Amino acid sequence: METRNNPAGDYVVIKAKEDGVNVIGLTRGSDTRFHHSEKLDKGEVMIAQFTEHTSAIKIRGNASIMTCYGEVESEAKK
Figure 1 (tube, rainbow, N blue to C red):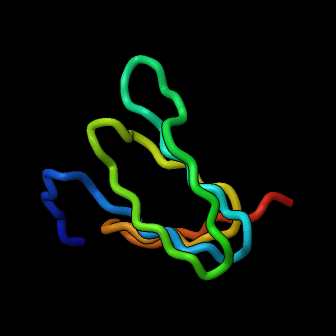
Figure 2 (figure 1 turned 135 degrees about the vertical axis):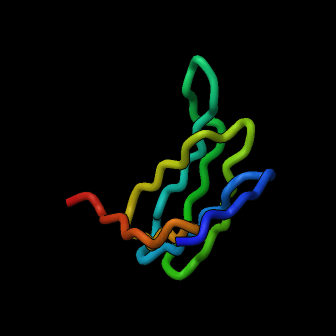
């Protein structure tokens, strides 16, 4: 797989497969905290970016997540 050098941070594409998918940005540093939250409905797409402030992105619900490293599917809570 090709390695990408993006000084602005890696992008993540999230496509909701159901209504109510939560996308939560988590901070970087000694304390990990929520700093942003979005709710997506079925078919909506969000493009998120890792930055100096965002070290993790948490996704709740059924969604497709696409990165430069590949694609993964999240699942709804059963």
